[in-house]
Image 1 (cartoon, rainbow, N blue to C red):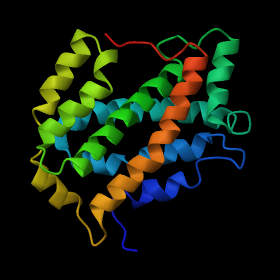
Image 2 (image 1 turned 90 degrees about the vertical axis):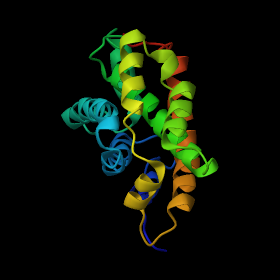
Image 3 (image 1 turned 180 degrees about the horizontal axis):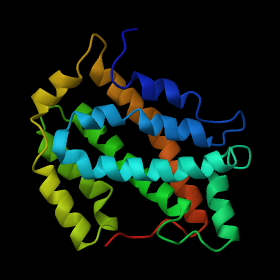
Length: 202
């Protein structure tokens, strides 16, 4: 099988869960990191999203590094903050995980749109995925800056040409969405069970 830009994420997802189905911290963060080179191809339009994702990965990664045994499982980062009553702080790992998961929701929806609606423009695909994911959690400031950024997205054909390789990009795009979507749903379900899934941005 020829590789595509999605191959590292697809391969990474195979290592993401323990034999009991629990999400492992390091492989989850590593899989999120593999999407950064794809985001680079969007240019300035995704700079805010990329910076947000990188900041949240770093926050979770540095906490994990403090005690890799204790924080081997992703939810342990949240549980530790629930116990100390710090989960709702804006600088918490819980908040970082919530926004990282939401950003990943946006990217999954975006790639799903590009795969399923091959007649859509990039702007149309971005607007639709933003409306389905991040928009309801964004206040006026965040929403305004996102709306401006979406206007800067590259032409769809140009973007697909840039990420093209010898592999089947569309097939891997679909495989990535199908594999990652249930993981994100699992994280949301856990955060919801802790009453920690409704924090909003300004």
